[in-house]
Each structure stands twice: as structure tokens, then as C-alpha cells.
Length: 196
Image 1 (cartoon, rainbow, N blue to C red):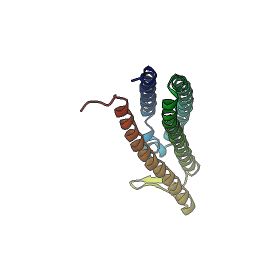
Image 2: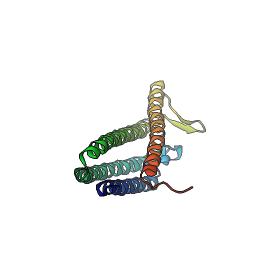
Image 3: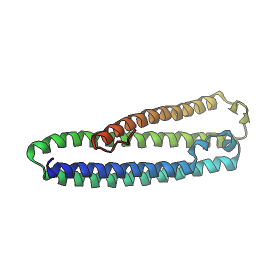
Image 4: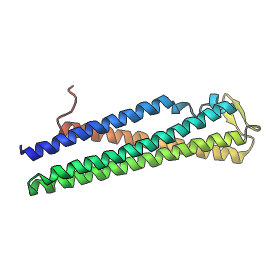
């Protein structure tokens, strides 16, 4: 194997490992926020609980901003490193590797942009639910069935917001499955796959 090819593979391994670490750090910080509790009746049924939920959503927005910055830096660094590695390769191999690299980077950028856009939709919908509940607190009752609105219009709006939450969840699950499949293939190609 040509030394420049080995260098390219080592760069890919290093950046893949960094990407996994960044994702794990994001997931750990997000888990600390307990976003699955933001829309529980226990929170929404009280003013203080709803305010806690809104504060959590604000923290999630901050985490998203930090994640976007980290992702941007990671893409710039990896692009620079790969460009340098490609420049050291024989021309024929440069063209082959560059096509695959561009395709991979474009997919990663699109997937990450989709994740951020959908997560922002989720946050917007969750905040809108909190604000709707707060603005109708005098006319809403909470029971075993959840929030009961006195207005059909409010109920319809609430259900539309919940539909956004559910849609984003489904998109995130599908996105995670696709990313895991791609990660598994990348680990195998780079000789980093965990042994069975």
C-alpha cells in the first residue's frame, strides 16, 4: 500500500473517531437535560413545571448551537486534512478517493443539516405547546387522558403540534438507523469494526 494511501486511511480513522466522540458528547449532554420529560403532564399541569420545560428547551437550543459550531469546525479540519492527504497521492488515486470523499462529505452535511432542522422544529413545537398550555391554563383541565381543552380550536392546534413532535421523532429514528448502517460500513472499510 502506498504511504499516501495509508496516510489517507489514518486520517479517515482519526476523523471518524472524533466524529463518534462528538456525537457521544452531544448525546450525553442531551440526556442530562431529560428532554423526554419536557412534555409530560406532571410538568405541563403547573406554571412552575411549564417554566422548567421552557428552560430545558432553552438549554437544548444552546446545546444545538454548540453542536453546530463543533460540527462546522470538525468539517473544516477534516476537509483540510483530507485535501492535504489527497495532494500527496498519485493522480489516479486522487480522483478515485476524491469522488468518494466528496460524496461522503455531502451526505454527512445533508444528514447533519436535516438533523438540526428537524430538532429545531421539535423544539419550536414543544415551546409552542408550553405557551399554548400557559395561555389557556384557566380553561384546561388535566386528567388521565392528558390535557383537556375547552376549545376545539385549541385542541386542534395542540394535536397539530404533537404531530410535528411525532414526525420529527420518526425522522430522527430513521436518520439514526441510516447513520449507524453507514458507520458500520465505514468501520469495516477502515479496519475498525468491533470483533464479534
